[in-house]
Amino acid sequence: MSDVMVRAEGVYKRFGRNEVLKGINLTVNRGEVMCLLGPSGSGKSTFLRCINHLEKINCGRLSVDGELVGYREANGKLYELHERVVASTRQQVGMVFQQFNLFSHKTAIENVMLAPINVRKHDRDAARQKATELLTRVGLADKLDAYPVALSGGQQQRVAIARALAMDPKLMLFDEPTSALDPELVGDVLDVMRDLARSGMTMIVVTHEIGFAREVADTVVFMDAGVVVEAGPPEQVLGAPTHERTQAFLSKVL
Amino acid sequence: MKGTELTGGEPGRPEEIRAVPVRRPGRWLAAFVVLVVSASLVRFAVTDPDVGWHYVGEYLFDPRVIHGVIDCVYLTVAAMLTGVILGVILAVMALSPNPILKSASWIYIFFFRGTPLLVQIVLWYNIAALFPGHVIAIGIPFGPALVHPDANKLITVFVAAWLALGFNEGAYMAEIVRAGIISVDEGQSEAAGSLGMTRVQIMRHIVLPQALRVILPPTGNEAISMLKNSSLASVIGFAEIYYETSAIYAQNFQTVPLLIVASIWYLVLTSVAYVGQYFLERKAGQGFSRAQRATMWERWFALSAGGDGRFGPGGFDYRGWYRR
Image 1 (cartoon, rainbow over the protein chains, first blue to last red):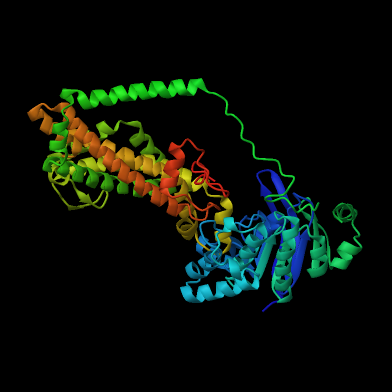
Image 2: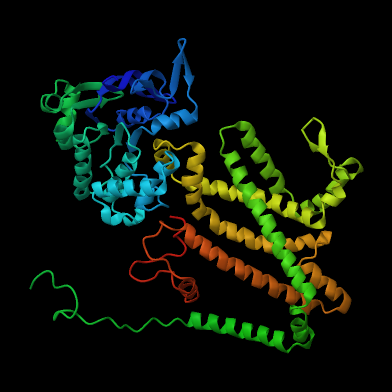
């Protein structure tokens, strides 16, 4: 088993004529926490979505745990994978969205139980027990039967994290998980993510929370205009950035 | 004085405002006109001997009329179910990336929505004429036929009316279902996809249940239209309410009383449909409103009292809750 969880080599992505990713090269090791920083439109979220094959890449190679994302390579040719195969690889990658995207017709616990029951075919009682444990872990033991509308943004986002964890992912992707939250609710969500990082989960986090990145990340990557400008340990990238673009960004954010 | 003393009985609090309301003579006048007109209509209906209320009472529960009511319900339920199933299939086809499925759905809707229902009913009734010797061949397309049912026996009056109403309804339901599916935020499908659900699972567990909230109100409307449109099936001799009542007045010439009988039954059926719609909507709205949902009587009260439909401190907006 290789230590590399995500490997991106020359990843390009364009929407129409607008090229959003212009050759991303990155590796994320097993157990590593990587924070992606950068201004809006720099391609951070798009890159994250490519890892889950929510977007198809146009050039390069992107693999998760040694397997190409969305394709199969044989005899020097790429074959598109069947939707079912893509779905089954997605089961192993959890994703948390900026807008939470909780299923609004389901209660908190039903949100967490849905995929284990329908995708993993777990039986209902086992799924319920696991969902209860997960929701307790994110501090929502008293909100099991609440519908998303009755939850605050921070609570919704913690349910969303529990929902992703219910599939026992080997990699967790966070797409600006705290950007839509009131400032006083951010802390609860970051606490949950901090715990998760400590438990050894491999995580890629697109965020604007510099403090969180400094404290939790093993690697900080600064992206701008579709390329990786600077990457390294937080004390280096955040403490002593060498690139002028990184310095300018950090001086505005900090 | 502390800043927390904001509630109840504090010494400095001014008294409640009890202002004299603005006089609105226009409202009084309008109310008066409406009352006078309605009173004279009621007086006419009750006292005019030609209305013949005793005939209404006599025929309201006539076995022939009851038979018509039952057949009307059968036809409506069968055609509505067909329409809903067809509508879901056509809507999914219309939203499919496959251009053939997409255009097939579009052509279906174009045809069935663009021609009058009455024409379609008569057309289905005469469909047997299309088959040589009135024999339909059912089998492998372009290949050998497996069964040869007699078209005249297969297409009874009920089947013709059912197919016509159901296929016609499918076109309208397709548009309603499509609007419902589109109304569900894309983030819901993405979240479900990121959990490893397939497109079919996402449709079944995530999108359609949420689309239902948008689909139900116009579907209730369609069901009520269908109850009334089923009377068109009388032209091919299907014995529903209107057919039965008109058969009776053709004999005894009590046209108006029997049309009143028919109207009463249609009103009863549409009221039942309304109640059913209310409960279905309440079920489908689960998770979409923070406030406790109003009961049907509260909603009726709020509507008739001219309120804006809001209740209590939490607020309940009957017009908006299913659209949010």
